[in-house]
Amino acid sequence: MDIADFHGRSRPDACPGALQVHAAADGGLARVRVPGGRLTPAQLRELAAAARRHGDGAVELTSRANVQVRGLAHDDRTRDVSGDDPATGADDEGPGGDDGAGNGVPEDGFAARMARAGLLPSATHERVRNILASPLTGLDGPGGGGVTDVTPLIGELDRRLCARPALAALPGRFMFALDDGRGDVAGLGADAAVLAAGPDRFALLLAGTDTGLRVGTDEAVTALLAAAEAFLDELAARDVTAWRISELPDGPALVAARVSAALGPDPTADRTVQAPPSEPVRPRPVALGPVGLIGAAAPPGTARSDPARVALGVAVPLGRLTSAQAEVLADVASGGDIRLTPWRGVVLPGLTRTEAVDAAGRLRAAGLVVDPGSPWIGVTACAGRPGCAKSLADVRADATAVVALAPPARHASRTDTLPVHWAGCARRCGRPKGRVADVVATGHGYRLELDGTGLTCSGIEETAAAVTAARGEL
Ligand code: SF4
Image (tube, rainbow, N blue to C red; front, side, top):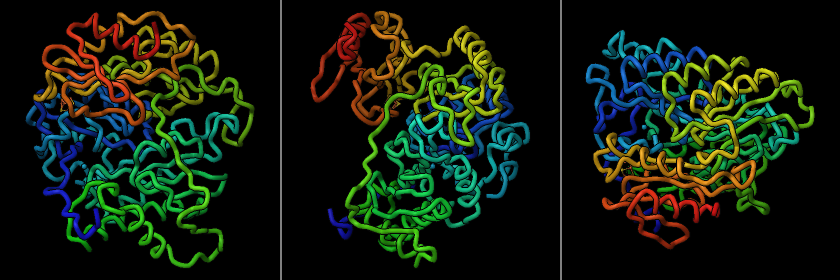
């Protein structure tokens, strides 16, 4: 389609935030942005306490490494929004002013608690702080895949994003990504991403397409913000509404041209533009997050990595952390840093080996997954019943039943296993990118779909057998 024929969406996106709460079937749904997935133990504790006090008691992890809480009572809904998408636990996310404690937020309500915990630094920009970052960046040394540490860019991007009033108009679904070169988050569908091509060199990708623009570290955030502004300028010029760059015909090229013009002449001559690029980078979607000990075998390395320390990757079944589990995570995060991953898991960096072993035992006992051979690896689900009125089944309960029937792992690790996504209807909210086995409720059972073929299953045992076969675990 030509851009001249593009008429856009009929309405702005309605992604929930902490202030703009969605009225879901099971109560209010609030989503809290966590740039780079970085939380302190104190913030996780506060989230857990707020979920227990105001919501259904669980902290849900999203595929953008954000968190959400369901079941909020009416008093906690600062502004209800409607719309069919966000109810669902789908992770496409949507702005909010000055500080979170203003705008009529009840002082003892959910949003005010988030603001006091430092999780709602801007009411105007709360829904647009969607920033993915490589969760292992800076942790595993040169052997781990990253070529630089993007940690400093997370805070810089968040600060500068929130400091630009015009960018509060971004759709809540617009997403940034900071990839340290391992290609883990650049393939996850961000609108604007930088992917490290060297210690001080980044490729700019728009809607997953390499623009050919290469910038140094000092321009990486500037380029991302220029892309966001260029997207809004393009919408304004066309007088259309769109939620993602990919929705615009020729969106990446149109936005890239504006970014290049906005950056202007390069005073250092470090920047290059080659469109189309002769050797484009094409990051592939990564479907599974890190689980188990990380960094133990990595060569001692960069100034940031410490060979005496390891990280622990934790998978969270169906992305739902009970408040008790969240408390245990906060307790064992002795490195002082908790990193949420876009695979609905957590990385705890900076542990000694003894601390990691102890932490693994406590987390396992709490029902979290630290074993790379666990049948929970790669299993995701939409909200289903009772959270979504459209759902034909309680997909989380059924997915749990099927995981319980899974055969023992044939290998010590399932980290290359086929992802399986359970959905209560054909919309398949929250489906991971890439090759996935879909298990979709039909009202009479499930239909397993993979690579264009489908199999209808009438009961849990039949569905479990089909999932096992699809994953090659017979
Ligand atoms: S039931 Fe359908 S609309 Fe509801 S969360 Fe699941 S996939 Fe989305």
